[in-house]
Image 1 (cartoon, rainbow over the protein chains, first blue to last red):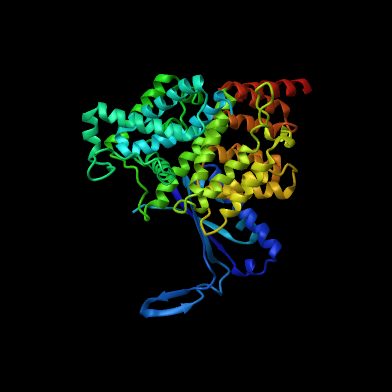
Image 2: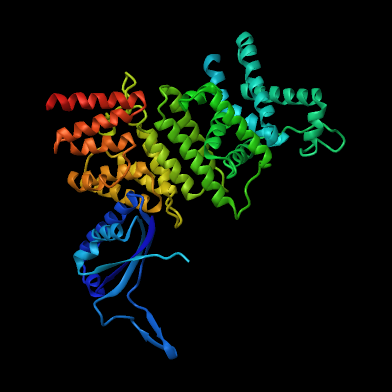
Length: 113
Length: 412
């Protein structure tokens, strides 16, 4: 078994534009999906959601705010799962609700230091 | 109360108190001597009270006899006295008489300290449960063996090793340091939770005995809620969850001793008072930030006390199971979550998830899939029920499955 990180990317405007009812439904879908991974004993870390605002520090101490505000692909959060292979992990990621809301999941094996 | 009822009743409540106080007096390394003196006290009570009738104040009588028996023992066994007298309080500087403090305060403290000692992290969990049943619940070797569906030798060995461990690890009867109390309390709660489950789910046939184990586990948990040092939200959540489960005790077995599943239970048999008490403790558990697994399980238990099958009920239960699994995986939670998924979403969704569960050696896994396939594909359902029957060990489970298979076959 290996550990993998799922990195979630989406346009921040999608969630900002949701009504409270839509937010709740979205939350349920996320919980069902992560709960399913946990029910199979394959959740390593529930991870965290990331706020939209933030700073990016670049060489020469240049600080820019709002890392990727202009892009449609801001990192919104991550979780860690356990799977036999990259293929299995990728298969698990296919159920992620973000895929039905215009976002994507990056699946990356974790190299333990 | 007649003697026949009085003595077992007092045994339940007083045996652990006398044992705890004496163990504290002698040191935990001599716990068997404390248990022997407590047992002898009750033996004498049943002889004397049988002839003369019970005294006016039976509890005071027991304490006096226990105290005298202890002093006799110390007088007889000088060597033991020298060994223990170094570590215990004396009545006064002049006298070397050992003080046996049977005040209400010391009794309560000793019992709580005994709980922490028995649930010491150096002891394997099964030893903790064995000791808890023996020392805190006053169950004999026979009863413990029948509760665990095992033989006397196994239990004897287990208890012997557990006591040895208490000695070699030099576990002391004391309250944990403030900084440690959270972790140590977690260990106590885990053992109490397992103790309760032993009673609630164990395969043993003796329903009365199993109910007693549940009541004892609740009693011990209640004691923790009554002490300011241990009255914390997870303790209240655990007690709430026990109350909710225990409320269905009468409804879950029919007069023939067969298991009645939740959806088939007569809810007029659910104990309303216990449900109210569960709600009370769940409210008390709601202070603070910590959301323990007991909070989630208590919340699930609460929704189960509402009989009506509303979409809200199953949605809530599903989400609590999701949270519970994210917090900590367990096969039972995984199976129950899948059942809730069928109720809150659809059987098809649940079947898809169930097939990924990888619990094929668990009879409950096959029962669940059988249940999910009912009405969708009865042939498949039957295959799963038969597979479950092949794996089920307890008589009650086998009865239940045989009945299911008969019903499905009739329809088909």
